[in-house]
Length: 274
Image (tube, one colour):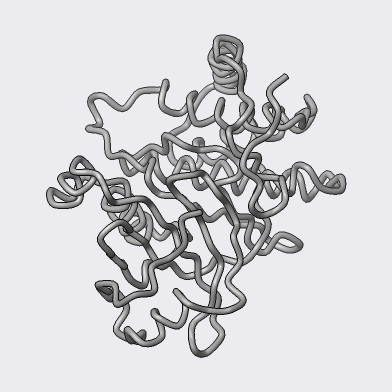
């Protein structure tokens, strides 16, 4: 199992209020909890000296190819750092990067913990009221449209990557995995990007056995349309066309069962494929 490095790693700080000793404490915290084990990459929850929770994302960094990618800043962690900073500039809630930790065979990011359930956990939980569903769907629409209108899109817009903030009152959406944040020149940014992000919201729940009710689907489409119409007015056909295109993407997709079940207990490696 890939654990955070503890033997004098190189620590690069991004937050001036945090010192290297506090980061090292997080790397060696006795109560550190494994959240995800993907073999060559793991995700841990730990804490700083002041008990502030942090997330540590670790990847193997032992091959020449990974060293090359890190040297030219095209590694997954470099891509995620750029995505996180883009989200912060856009005012979209996300994980604040605190430090990068590099060892001979490790490359880790230490991020501020974002509290709250994932959208997938909310969908798998107790039924929501109609008003809660409407507010949640509008929040999802708001964050998607906020990206599109600034010429960005999210390639990995699945519910387990979206944290629901202020779930009980006025929900907002935070993106916690920014590797898939991409800039696209306005000339090439098309409705297909919006459709792909909508389809991603359905594929992951289907892969873990969650059925999205038709009424929730309609409310999500209304959330998309309301957020979009606030900036770019569309006709009544917007929702119908959006869902028809998204349904085509979903039907053509292969087995949506994830390699790591995001609803499984911490440390679970895989789910059975049917």
